[in-house]
Image (cartoon, rainbow, N blue to C red; front, side, top):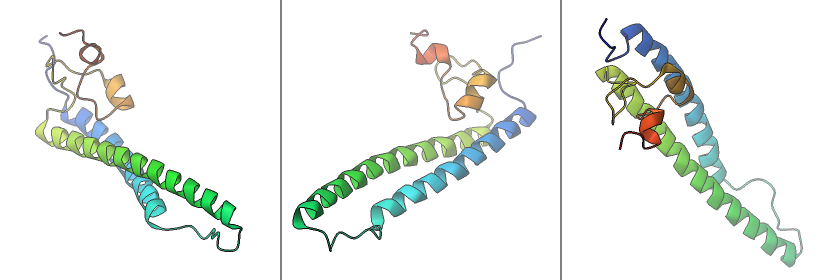
Length: 126
């Protein structure tokens, strides 16, 4: 029996469902981060002493910067998931971009946007 070069349509559909679920959750997480950056919480410091106000504003700035970094990572994750959906449409999903071999299902279930097998990621193909 020849070695399998791509996943079947049924297998691709299974991965599509996994990816769509992760994409929905990632989008909700991104929106939560984005709203945290753009909206000031109702915990106003206008009635506290100036020292506490400076400390509070500094903490809020740090929190917004961290939320900004997390939002950027979330955008990258969402884009990776969307690219995986395109690969499913093209029927190239699950094929290692370095070795050309199929990435094991277990890896794709854990990291559905993976484009490299573990061996390729660890540099075993170089």
